Image (cartoon, rainbow, N blue to C red; front, top):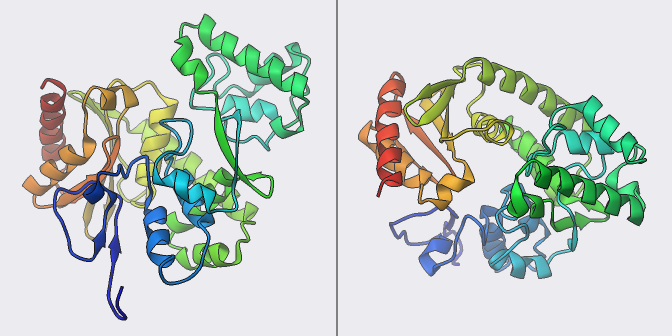
Length: 345
């Protein structure tokens, strides 16, 4: 890298080659699961200064790159070895430092039938097992963990979810100084979504991820946005969609779509629209079984947006685009045709 030279790092799929651009797909590396944008930025920065890969791993976890395989793989694995983050096998539910009933009630990968979003049911379930529902997972004894894990697996199997769903409860988790780094990633993500990038950069430099007030503010906003999105949820062909207008800010609309996809049972892709100064932001999320069948939202989003005078791209299961205002109906029609075409090849 020469002085004054600009290098672009991008982990999204691209058919085109750009000089001075570092893209994993140029080298046959999957940018969806094997390295994140943070990992690529680290690779460039580490050629300039002697730094470890801790922030690169926090970025990979924030990008959910451990979800598909229940562990980090590929280049992320190499970066992990050069970080100060500890990896261990454990329950993968988010919120292992929160009260057990809350962790269980709001788990989404997988959601626990009969307990999902039911605090009282989760409390009754734990009380029946003889476990204090106010305890956190990290405070439980080895025997309590075994009892709870077995009971969760039993629920999933008895409800007909099968081994594949049950095994997703267990996998690799990542901690720094004893705290789940998903907490750090969530905090940084929420700050960035609301245009407070300078605060996020300062946190990364100082490695002080203390922001409970910010987390509370983010959670309150998310609750309002989800309620708004649900009230406007509709269908179009194989698609589901909602329009956030100017109420849901465009930097968060993709997050809301992702959360709805985890919370509800969607048979097809979910599209989310939001207005900004440049036009209409479109975010798309797809159920993983459709991706396994060959669905590629990135290609569908790029093709459809370009035909309407916009542009787009992303990943197979999550993609985005910017289109001119007033083109939403046409976009739905054309995108639906793209999806049907992909799934019937």
